[in-house]
Length: 378
Image (cartoon, rainbow, N blue to C red; front, top):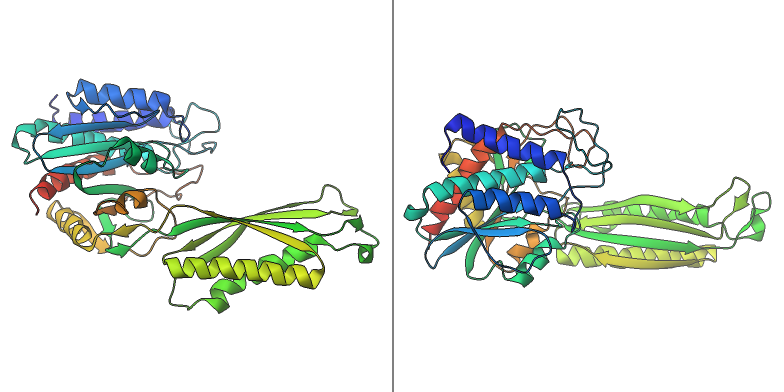
């Protein structure tokens, strides 16, 4: 399957739009998987027989050395408001993070690599990963064997804050540890007119929110990155009754394991201290999410050199406080994760997110070149 440049560009955009119109949530990407399998098979790519409920792994080339490229394929539970002509046809589900773009980029790289298959100095494995948003997909692919014999892996995220044609990455820590906490405050209910007869959990919850903000500002070195955000408070069901219980939920983002443990320790200490002061009870549940994404220094520098060689304007990325399931691969093998500008007027996970599709063709050509050149490295 050979395309003229303009036809190639339009094919990738068409695939992206078809994926965008038909988004599926994490672990439910059945139709998405079928589409990608069909497109890859039609282009003559070898599909590898891994046992996966959703997701696709393909390969191009021959030889012992293997380099992997990864795209993510799942969408988010968001009602689209972008207004584009190819908006989501699935109510309440949207590709608001650009995984449809990422998939189209790696599909394009697959086509380009297939054209040069006989000249490739090894194999390129193409991972179309499900369930990135709930951080289970990378583990599923690794368990299935998708990283066997792979010497390095590369992936991307579109960056709405960067112009199209801009490339950024960094060696070392890049994306953050992502942890979730739930705080359950148990007080004593009472009539709102007689608060002294109870232990008001709403006042305690309010104090708790303020106290948690002192962790970043007063407990952690200001040169270390940390975010503590309370994102949900739920309690009470009427206007004149003090409730018995209030529940708070939130997230912690860090880039170092010792800071991560220190923050968890302080949250538990603050909760215990305030509970004692208010004569109440606060139960803390802590859920570890994806770990810090740590780029291999060599491969991060290499990925930037290749980006410069194909015409990207490159820069060293700032630390990201978001999480990324790609981090799990980098715990197993070396590689690099990169940002490519998508110039969306709205950010990731926004209902009006609308990346500039012109990034797709150049990014596809970049990843094809990156994979081929990486196969030549020691």
